Length: 430
Image 1: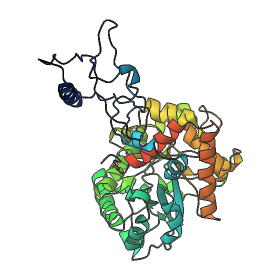
Image 2: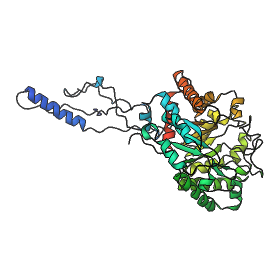
Image 3: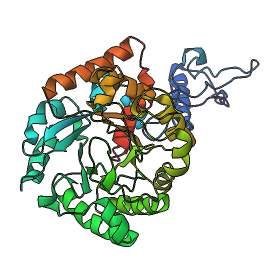
Image 4: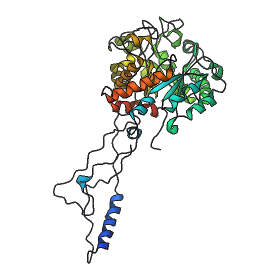
């Protein structure tokens, strides 16, 4: 919410005394002069706070100007004791502070929808959903025009994150429309980083032309097992390599290829699924011990962050040594490690909260959404099954109720919403 600007009057002195008789007209004239002086004063700009959303501007107003006890206020200036508002620069955070909790909650939700029937998400998009997640294996030829029509329902025309899984190999949703890529394991073995970037850019350019602006890729898990991904191994051929250095270089090349084509990459699955005990989609799963991941699995994420990764997805696996909850619900994994130690400032997404690893940990999808946001995630996802509209409403209600009940801070919700807007370079003040 915008606040009016007021001059810092620390050095204000009374205007010079008017010559001659102090007529009413002259008093008014002097007051007008003083008003001009006051209107011309400059205002300070609050310093950035790295812990708030969007561009990182603190919501706390700057300290009120101090005044010496011996100074005398100008008779033409307002009483300082009555001045309570201070200058606040317009930022996404200050704008979002004026939004309702419900609208903020909707912005943190990615709604699943079939790519052959994207209009099914019209109601959720009209209610302010921050994104849609496309499911399917063959995109319609007119997907772009359908998505353009869907985006027209976004409140305030602020744009929409339209995301899908276009990794390569067997994980491709719209290869018929944008072209096919081989499994990442093939790319990591047979292509140079330059070739990976070049081929990914071609696909990304077609994705962007079809109005898809976010790809849930690349996978930078260090695995290297020569198997198809399945219940017992979520990676296999989805991983570029079992060599940390190869994955780091290939992952950055893939990420840069997407960005060059106009698509936002989502690096996944933090802190690394390589060597996991199971696939979290089907049940509880554990990664390698944290002490091992720090040496083997974290470097590709570090490389991606240094190269400007705009978004990172957090896995649903438990990380031995980082707590007992899945990483997507762990403040230690997200706030302490990803945000704190690695210094990531972009968008954090959860993996699907419909995964059986989440329910096995004792969380419903709405409850998991609240816990994910509390832990530092900015956007939550769930699967295309059941009544999507009802599920979306339940998640939004759980988030708003958590804020009302004091279980989720409003500032954290504003922070999350700010990251959703920032990844698309939305400026609410323009």
